[in-house]
Image (cartoon, rainbow, N blue to C red; front, top):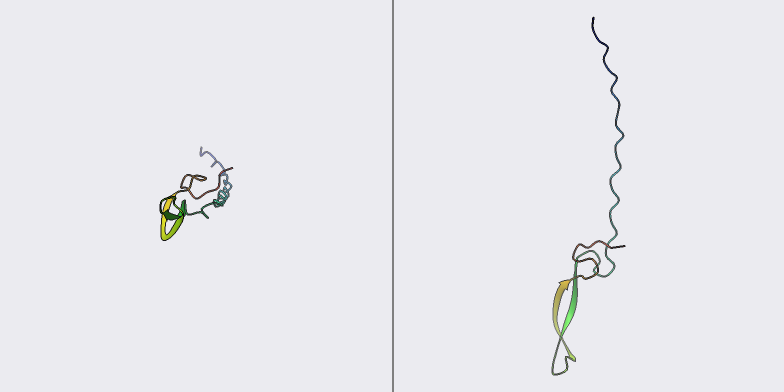
Length: 65
């Protein structure tokens, strides 16, 4: 005696996770830029820039809630 095949069930496709919002401080780059100031009291700005890790998102580029 042959056994009947069990009907297969279709699984629902899970929707992709939504993209997290970009960090408003670094615009999603993960780094911030500041102008380098020189002089006795650091009052004279130069054309040079210094990059640093964004403290709002810790370099991920995604906004935190």
